[in-house]
Image 1: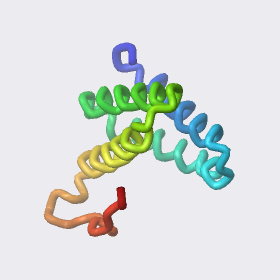
Image 2: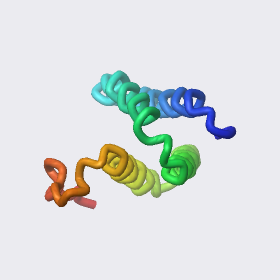
Image 3: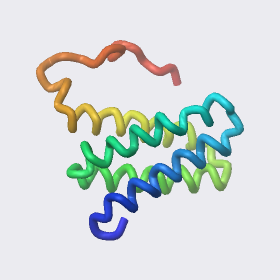
Length: 112
């Protein structure tokens, strides 16, 4: 990420996610392209002031690509970290959960 070229970063992030969904071979995942594109564009507006979170996300994306390319078993864990991190960033940026309220489904846990 050169400087703060947020539009280029967002375009690359969209391309990254669309490519992952497409190469998965899962038709249902491929149908999520529009949803992911919208979410990433919204993220540009809401979250990019959180520079450190953005840098961490970029590092995790790079690690995920490397894990996929090498067939590493860490793919699932890295994916989970990215998703959970994105959720926390969104919550922080929106300021919705700071007053002791929990998001819907907060009591649900993903089985490992």
